[in-house]
Image (tube, rainbow, N blue to C red; front, side):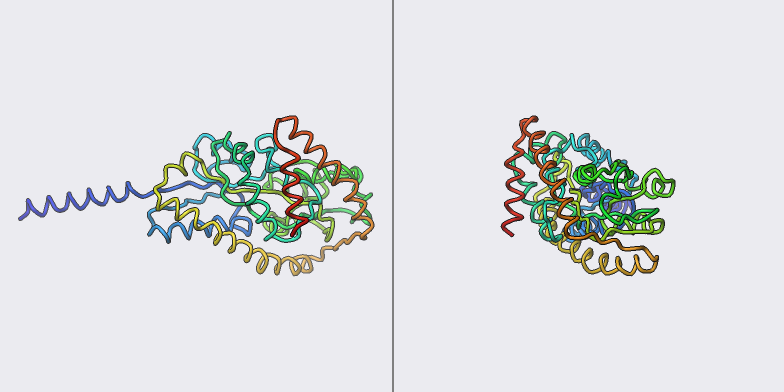
Length: 335
């Protein structure tokens, strides 16, 4: 009997280890802390685990796996299986998706940003672009138009940005250059210190990031309607890891993307934006609104030159810049 029980115990342990070995775990590289910007990844992890009975899990790390500007590199070498990054962090590495970072495209809602991103991510040139990094685009992180929180004298007109050092990436940086600003790109986690120390006088972020990274705790003014553009920050998977999933695991992942994005947009619209106005008022932050004429002049000065320069740059790389730009602007004008 003891001999039989011993065999049964060994068999049970072996089965347990076999079951453990069959489970799939993906490491996911994010940064900062959990916030509106990461809610779709958190929801995706929850859904994938539920659908697979815990046999496929996403282990989310906030800065423990890589710096945000190195997430695409980490994906390319398989250091982790999933990551989030922003196109403007390294334009040369993902030129095709920077079309959505061009200034003054006219995107109005998070839902529209989602639709544009998902369509762009499926374009063959974009798929090929990211394939250079062994990356497959899964979903965007739709963000509203950026605006500035700053310190010192509040700008009364757009000309007051002349010579001002501002944190602005991608197309937003190009737009600020058009009115004489001096844009600099830095990690989101470095921005509060830069604002505190006077390295920059104003910071462009979406509302959630101004709250998460503390710029509204230092800033004294906020631009309500510059709306120069936004950034495109996709979530990607390592292609080899994605291809190695079982059919069940892959279906659990891919079938959860829409629900994860639905959750993200609902969270941003109904929680983040609901908290934004009161956060500004509690801190006594001056809200600066520019005239329609000033914004029209800003648009005219920045939009067309930035778009033309982008198209020419893409053409120089043998990428279909005009085609991508026309696709995005066509979708916007037709919506």
